[in-house]
Amino acid sequence: MRHRSLLILTTVLTTGALTLTACGSRDDSKNSSGGGDTQTVVIGLDAPLTGDLSALGLGIKNSADLAVKTANKDKTVPGVKFELQPLDDQAQPSVGQQNATKFIDNKGVLGVVGPLNSGVSQSMQKPLNDASLTQISPANTGTELTQGNNWKTGDKQRPFKTYFRTATTDQIQGAFAAKYLYNDAKVKNVYLIDDQKPYGAGLAASFKATFTELGGKIVGADHVNPDDRDFNAVVTKVKKSGAKAVYYGGEYPAGAPLSQQLKDSVQIPLMGGDGMYSADFIKLNKKAQGDIATSVGKPVEELDSAKKFIADYKTAGYKDAYEAYGGSTYDATWAIIEAVKAVVADNKGKLPDDARAKVLAAMSKVQFDGVTGPVSFDEYGDTTNTMMTAYQVDGGKWVSKLSEAYK
Image 1 (cartoon, helix red, strand yellow):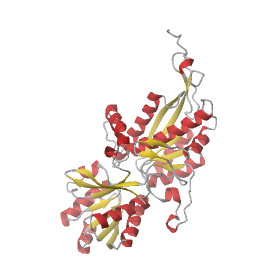
Image 2 (cartoon, rainbow, N blue to C red):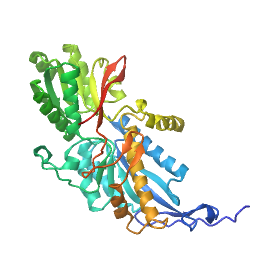
Image 3 (cartoon, rainbow, N blue to C red):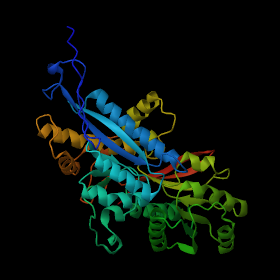
Image 4 (cartoon, rainbow, N blue to C red):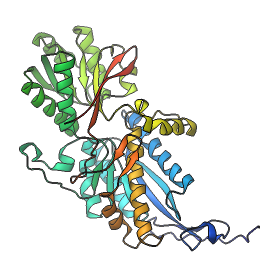
């Protein structure tokens, strides 16, 4: 039977808030919210969508977009339509802080996915926490973000109750990298370099602690500017040191030319963390062969749980690859969707007036089988999935060498 078209009513608050829409025709029997109205929930997305790190950022954006579209298609939360609000942070903490304010001001936003960079997250955590707005990063690995600045002494304290992540910490990643290089790659002498940013410096410190505990020797150490592209001075020091590998705490835009200039002088591999694990590292580096990187989780291509994600991503036609954080981003976005689902179910099919606070409370209890495997969070907001993978460049692509859960 054809139903009489209704006037679509849209209520927009001055903050860009919640939208209530009658969906063109009235058929209450098909809407479990009981009123025929669809409530719109906005999920914010913060990542570098332009600039040197945009390859990773666009993969994050697309994967979050896929999760939102899947939830809407499958009516995962009856009576609720999800929308994604992506904002470009340009990998700059100041821009990330501005984006946090925009998300807070939009009352329709009930959760924020991102950012990529730990340094950017440091600028976003407090304002989002003050607004009781849930944040979940698929990529941040800085240990202090969840466990506080004194975590190294064993004094772990969660600084912000609103912050969660589906990526494990640099404490785990650095230790895993050191064990792989020492035990599996059989490298005993390493030159240590970092880019002085929170992510790079923290990762290098964690690597150093475990590598020296194992009996490895740091034969030299240096800091570089992440914006530099001429590394001949530090390469000369590396050559004189007798190092058998360089460990670099930083990201691929500087890591790629550092590796290439290193190979021009001395034939030893460069190793880094998940900030190096990108196809663009290889594109920017003609001599990447043999270089090593670690990344969080197991390769999604090797997971049965990721087959649908990979197929759906391809079908969706995104022009950019999902890159290193595709699976963890989908899971991060889905965690917010699951929290909203629980809140709506507990409130008779409607969003409550204090939806942000209720979604935050629901986040700590979220558990589901995700793209990357079982998803849940510990008392610090950290993922309970501590799987790490070591990759090596071989034949112009990253090849997984070892996947292991941290113990």
